[in-house]
Length: 109
Image (spheres, rainbow, N blue to C red):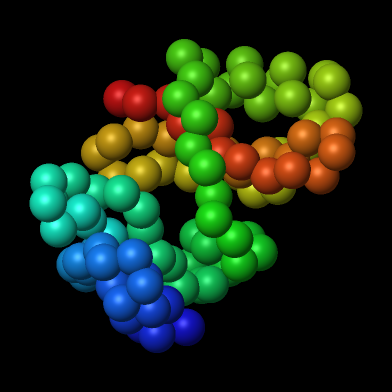
């Protein structure tokens, strides 16, 4: 589905795409045509993303992802997946707050 969705966002929003190798398949980095800066990613629902629902996933920078996960769980939230490494950029974990909203906690390297 990511192959079709990257084309959808290219047409609807005007983003450009480039392939990001995930080993046996490619996801996509979407960039602004003006700045060439990454603005989002379009991913297949497989590999590390197989257990995530289709959604826009907001990333929030934190100083210590493990401590933030512990605080999340202590306050009634939950970690939806284990901590994952984002190749050379840092690590993240997808959490759900007590109301059901989902986001990713990102600790930059």
